[in-house]
Structure formats: C-alpha cells, structure tokens
Length: 371
Ligand SMILES: [Zn+2]
Image (cartoon, rainbow, N blue to C red; front, side, top):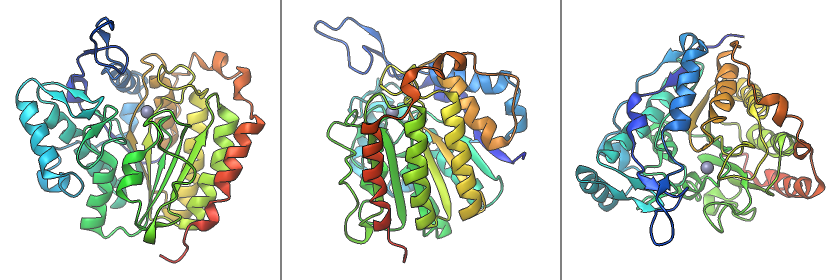
C-alpha cells in the first residue's frame, strides 16, 4: 500500500570532508595516503539511485535545517561544541576518536542533525506516515563531549530529545541495525525508561569492548537497553531470527509511540568495515517487519536516520529496498547483485548464532511494562 513517505537529502552532505586516510585510519609513518572509507560516495550514489529509479518522485521531500546550538546542548557539552566550531572555521581537525572533518564540517554536522529533527517531527505530527533521512555525517557513535567513529553529533539522540522536549514523547524505541554498536543512544538513555534502545551488531567490532549482552540499562532504565551482538559471518536468517525472537517481542512489550531506526548498511556482504552477509532482500525484510510492528503499535510511525555503510557499489541497492518498502512502491531498479549474494551459504542460520539470539531473547521479559 502506498504511503506518504518523507525523504531528506541535501547536496551539502556530499561536501563533508574526511580528507585523505587509509580506510578508517589517518595516514602516516608506513601508511601511505589513500582514501578515507567514510567518503561521500556511498551516500551520493544512494541519493542518485533514489532519483534515477524514479522513487524520489513518489516521496515527500523534507528540507533539513541547521540544528540550533540550544538543540545541540540538550546532549553535547558547551566545550565540545566550541571546539568543533573553532576548528571548523579553520582547516578542521579530529572531533575526538577517528572522526576527521574539514573546513565547514560543524555546519554540515548541524545540517545532518537538523535532518533527523525535521524528519522525526514530521512523522510524529503525521505530516508523513514514515520516512528516511539520508543525512551525513552519521551520528550513532558520537558522545556528549567528543566525536567518535566518523560521527560528530549524536543526530538520533538529538532528534529524540527534541521530541521529548517539545512534543512530550514518553516512549520512543530505537532499533540500530548498523553493523557497529549504537553506543550513542545507549549511553544517552541508559538510566531512563523513556527510550528503549536496541542494537543488533557484529560482536566486538566497533567501538571496542562495547555492545555486550550484559549492558542492559541501569536504575529506572534497567531492562531498557538490549544488545544483540551477533557473531561475525551472520547472514539473512540470523538477522531475521533476531528480529522475530528479540526485536519484535521487545517492541510489543515496550509499546512505543514511535520507532526510530539507526540505519547503517555496513552489515551488507560487500562492506569493507563489517563481516556480515546481508543483501538488499534482508534490509527489505527487516523493514517490512518494523513497518508491521509500527502499524500495530504506533499508527505506523517509523523514522529512519542514515548511519554507516561503506560499499559505494552496494549501499544504493540496500537503501533503495528500504525506501521502496517505506513508500510502498516498487521501481524497475532491481538489485543486480542479489542473485549472487542471496545464494551464499553463509545466509543460513548456524547454532552459535542462534545461541546468542536466544540469550538476548531471554532479556525481553526484563523490559518494564509500567512506564
Ligand atoms: Zn557502522
């Protein structure tokens, strides 16, 4: 069924400059200068495929804006923002850990956070049924006082705090399917029951020693943080079982008013920074499940924010599959890689993957139902 699906993209996202690097490291010593893996390519090509496929004509354009300093201060420290602002006026620098940015990077990051604020508000208010912000730089690793893992500002956290402050949101659920742990939302809401945070990621990839099963929330938020650290090599069946056994039961128990997805495509089989096996039909199936849950629980309210994904060739097709599902429109741009990736043997569920999923499933009953 066709939906009113919101979509954010801005040309300036392509201008965020991570400089020269060697995959995720700065160059130097014996590391010959090469390309930084977080370049504009995967996002711009995703946006181009959305346009060329004709899907963009079916979407409701939502314009991003610069997040204000007051909005950023809901999570970030004044000292961190001042450091970003000053460096951005010059040649840029590193926002913290492995987070290079160039001249003007602070404003591009504010435009990225502003995309998530605008989209989440549009979905909350029912101006669109659901939506996808194709924003850059990403946000799900950023901490209050420093950037981390290519993320300058905590886009998703800032958007949720905006919804809480201005619209009285009391129960927000976050599902992070980026291959890396969603430490930003986990850290921001760890002691609160007003946000349920669920991260499904590759076990101990990035950040190091983060995203364990036992990180389950604290105080009033005890039970409201779920991690599903899947073993490297997990594929289509493992991810869908994790949804059926953990993500969907957790959402049903929590009863969110709106569902936010931190959407990275670096769990795809083609990604240089992940060791997972997903293809476009996996992302399509996960989107279908979340849409069905949102229909049942919160009038379909579902907002997705772009995170990682570093295969410039394959991110566009995984992303298009998600947007097609959100909009209820199939284009003629079928995934040409799918016949290859779908039949890889690693797509089948393996016992050690199932064991982790069952451990995570046992945590669902710890989610408080009275909040
Ligand atoms: Zn990632």
